[in-house]
Image (tube, rainbow, N blue to C red; front, top):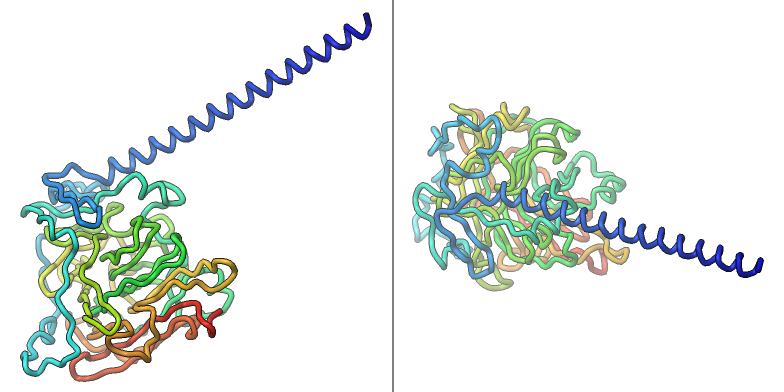
Length: 423
């Protein structure tokens, strides 16, 4: 009798425990489903914010969708300070001396010449006047980011700091550079013609880019930066294509700024060039070389920072109110390459910078920046004074400067990453 009672009690206890366990599983599963649906809702809201209604849609051969969006409906105007902003359709002033390099006659132009460049989506159409081309953000693009909030943003401490190259900082930041730079003056813009390649990326969370940085403030929490160039970033774009990009921040990559048009800030006026779209064609080793010219300068009248791509495309501007230090001027300009080294398997990454070849290999093999210039306080393009160079580990990626009559100030840069001298 006692045994039977004990057995019944034990069975009841087991049934209760099983019930609690099942309830726990159900509630965990419901919570999981709620989290998934909450995440989906957040992603969808973000996509609705970024992807504006299109007047026309163009499918690019690389799988991108380019939306032609009415100029007044672009993401910039979601910014509370831009609600009543009157779009400036052209800069008041271009820097003096901008077109000097084009005055070299055809017979004088050297054999080291690159070819014209365009964007891949142009093969399938163009956007009408009064619209701007915006690369459509897909759900999987946002899901690749660490969070919806971090989508389209660089990680904190991604700026090369030539004066603070201690090994602890290098390992902590995970970013490596090979750059040329100027500092110690007030700068109102910068220009460069950048050789375009398609470097190989080892890990999807790494990237390789070549750009110019326009910097103001300290390298602390208040750093202002405007950046433009080309990049390969599987994490951001979902492929290994070389793409045109811009970036801005007014607080050292913490809460402000983003790539391209992935937040409110940059106001685009151009209907032909899409931020974040693939550049085509690209350079090949010992073969045809292609490059892009980028100019960023401060309009002396309105104070906005304008960007020009090539000789023909004024893309738009960053309104001066976005910045603190750059509302006045820049205190440092940098040009060069950057990669993320996540040290897969405890070794240096084999992600390439530039062409993936060291500077000493020179034209057709190593990547270059040429016709490097800065804009001075009189809105003149000038050769940079006392160009410095910096790289954290020259056995992995290096930089070598030079100057001549045609290329002005230039440098070759880059490297393969992991090799026998960079284990």
